[in-house]
Image (cartoon, rainbow, N blue to C red; front, side, top):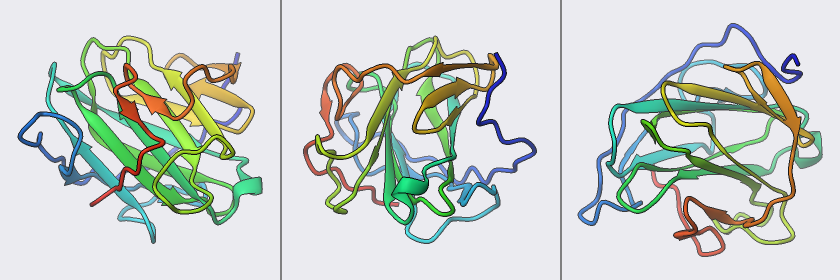
Length: 193
C-alpha cells in the first residue's frame, strides 16, 4: 500500500546531539534540529520549536523524522513528540507548532540500534508540557531499529516511509506514556533546547 501522507524531496538540519545526564536518564541533553513546519521542510528552526535528545544505550544511534499532515483541526497548537525505550537508553522530547495543518520534525540520533522504540505524539492544547486525556494522542512502536527512520502521520493513519506501508491508528493502550512505561507524560516534561 502506498504511503498516503508521504512528502518527497525534503532537506534536514540535524543540529547537535546532547549526551546523557549523570543518571543516564532523560534530561537536558543537547538539541537537535527542527526541519520546519507547515509541510515544507527547510533548514533551521521553526518559531517556538525545540528538540532535546539525551541518554546512551546501544549504538549506533539513528535519526527519526516525523512528518505530519492534515492536522488542520489543531492549527496553531503545539505538537509534542516523546521517544524512548527504557532508562539509560536514548530519550527525546520535541515540540513545534502546527502550521498549515502540518509539521516536520527531525530528531537526530534518538533511536538506539536493535531496539523497538516507542513514539508518542500529542497536541498540548493548554501549553502546560503535559499530556492529558482530553488531548489528541497517537503512539506506536517502531520495528527493530537498523537505520534512520521516517514516519508520515495524519490524524487517521501512520505510514512507515521505509516500508512504504500505512495503517489506521490503533487505540492507544497506554496513552500519555512512552518507552516501557517509565516516562509518564502526564507529569510536566519541559523541552529545553
